[in-house]
Image (cartoon, rainbow, N blue to C red; front, side, top):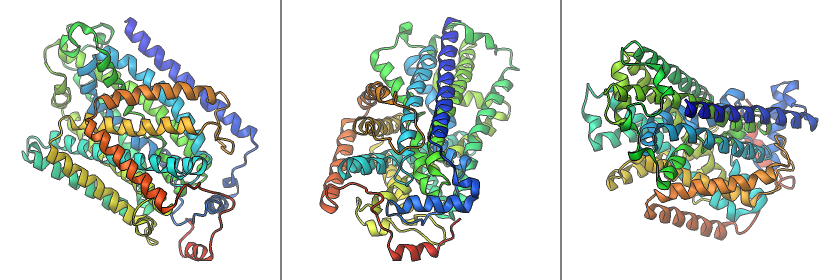
Length: 538
């Protein structure tokens, strides 16, 4: 009972922080006498946003049509609260126990809520597809920007693989009684590659359809949470189920707890690193800034609210799942935590299959969203000549208004990585990729917070001067998270990431030297204006 009260208290503190930041930021926006051009119609706002891009020497070649919901979906789909909860719940409980999971999750969540507010403040000043990469390029120069860009690409490709693998895992559960193809390694990885290929195709269609898919992804996640709760309700009809077990600490559930009930520092570190997967990548709404109406306001709100909703929904899902497996373990239905999902599907009388279908679709869309972000990062870096074959990678299809070559390259990188993983026969692949993603994103956040202090002068979305002091607390917390995740990543993988970053630095130095992204002085050429005239404004 005491543990439950502590969990709810921490959650309540987090919700008060979210509400407080929202109120404070809204007051700061009003204090700057900001007037949205959208009040005079979308066309006026479109011209205003187009002018903002011109200040950075960038033409409006992508269709600008993302509103509040679709912009929010860019970040919310990247976080993938439904898939992450279903796929990582068993590893969390196995390595830390239910109580520790439910106590640590809201604490980690509060850290990332503050971090998302800091990141939102930064991207508010940078309405370009490069997001944080362009923020660094503008304020700290090409060398640090190259590091950020390469790490982002590695993390984003990792997310594509993670969600594609998760989608295949759900399909394997759903089709287990119909085929054994997915039970074999070659069948599983081949299917995961097909999932990536379908995401590439979806990202190559007209941009207006991609926007719709983003919204559908968010709806699927919420529908999946409802389906999960419905499965629990169906289970309550069995005699073994009782909600009272959530109030009883370790009630005959020794199989769900560590020996002696105490986690080691290494296991706590593993939990912290895995829980960070729920929140890393929240800034990815910024990759759609060039396709978002009023991005200096809507993009930061999307970033902050995506992590906030993930915090609340994620805790509710973990609480429901914890109650569920405590009951299953108590009546002896399951002896191993890995069995919880298959047993739930079997016991929920049809609702379980519906849940798995929704989870598979949501997981596919999470990967599709991650592929969208990867292609925009490739596009941004190609325009800045930080990648080989920049002329090709920076191309945009005028008919579809998508960077089609960047999309294809992002999918190819993911499929090639899947092939390497299958050859190496990597074990615990979901946990391993999650750790790599956390290391890359965590490193990005540490570098940005350290080098970009006092760089939010022209941001509209501001959290105030106290962010200067909060920065050091976040750096300390993020260093712990990165160190914890790195501990569980193969040293060869870390060395490989370092080598790729160094190669990127060398290429950037040779190709463009040490420069900064400029604004105001940038001039849009006649050719760019003529090309823009061939593309519909919206």
